[in-house]
Image (cartoon, rainbow, N blue to C red):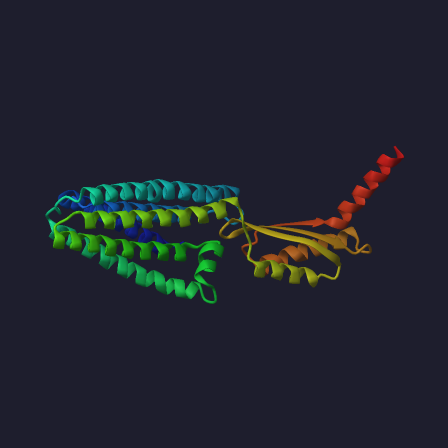
Length: 316
């Protein structure tokens, strides 16, 4: 990734941290539980931007580099940790703070102008960010449902960012509504209800992100269309008699492990087998560059040696 995207991510990270500090200050001045929940939300967004910067760093490794592969898996692990620590624990804290304010129902605090100003600036940032992310999503998700784009995408950066932006807007709307109602009726119960709703929103965000991290850590099967392309390439090889298995698993968003088991015709010699294997690997990498690790097993040879071993054991 070029320097410009890194600068944009860093700028967003700094902006999220600044908004988190502003929301915490406003929360102290107003005593608003909803603003505390929104500050936690901004901290979580900053954590996500930090993970994107880590992804940029991992992208510097050469294709197939084992260090890059290990760090890519580590990125998924720490992504899950950040999600649990910020969105999970933060969401639980926000729910608790909201429940306390809701049950206490004390008179609403002052300094409402400060709170409205902070939320207004946050809303402007969120709408601007969502507009750009939505355009990218519409371009990248053509012909796919939202579920496919989120759960099946191997590098779901755009759709995850869109979810985060939409959740950010919804959180700001909830906080603003809670503050307006609290000021209008003079009771903090409305602010507590808003914090409670934001906490549940953070918990939902944590659950979705944790599920995605789990799928990527355990190994995500390559798209069926890609596997079908591999089978078509194999079908064009005249020396192959039968294709037994094609297994493709994502080790990282752009790093796929492909295992193939085929039977060669009995009349194909060793030199011809070697040529066919080279041809298969070349054609696959040309058509599907993300399939960087291709392993081909000649099932006919394996079965020949198994039968030979069985005969030897029987004679013995």
